[in-house]
Image (cartoon, rainbow, N blue to C red; front, side, top):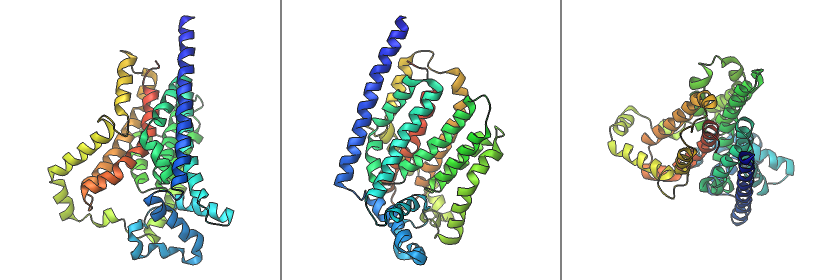
Length: 357
């Protein structure tokens, strides 16, 4: 009885913190959007501008591929601009509320999916703890109102992993969840170029070796083919790939200072006190849980998924190693957003792996 009362007390306290943090995120979104309704630079210079070409351009929408607009990354996939343009078509005007509402939807959807997926496997308290850590992450609070594509991409990564975990938790082994995971991965690569790295990593670390290939690929196929057609037939070449000459790759690979700078920035964003991602909190929690920190039943099942996230992060860091842009600038403007893409999935796997308090 005493243990049950303690569990109930802990659950109420955690729920209170979760509710306060959620209210804080919603309030921050409203205030930041009120101050900057069109989002930050990438929102109005890339995603929403591409949406305007789709909305205004008619048969001339491909003018967005003009060399004069190379700064806007015209090779980026069009799922997010398509959603924004679709909202404008529905309203009949280019109202700022449409991209802001889409950004808010994905931010709240990430929270809901994380909490519900962890709760399905590990229970309410563990799910609310995962939600609290996410809601207390400064990058998550700030990047939603920016109206960038990183939070939507984080949602699709999270959905792909959650569907696989739920598939493993069900007794009927429904292929629907496998196809749903593939579809989420496909929508991810239709959102940003980084989605290709995640889809490939998930395929090679989990799908291929678990013999779940066909249902997962069926889900992936449609968005992947559309995005591939866009890349091959319409979009210009990617700026990073265009600069990947053998001489440039060799010079960057032999420059030890680039490795040190990448590792130092990664440490600063994740481990250093005041970092935007609270990795030390997860380490401290793991130690506080005690000697039985790992839940053996679930930790083995998610090991390949940890591998997928690790390979995706490795691909991200390699892209910085060979970037044609000034490395310090590229890291300072991009690394925190790339980490945000992975952070909700890290929390999903972490709170499924570790024991309950």
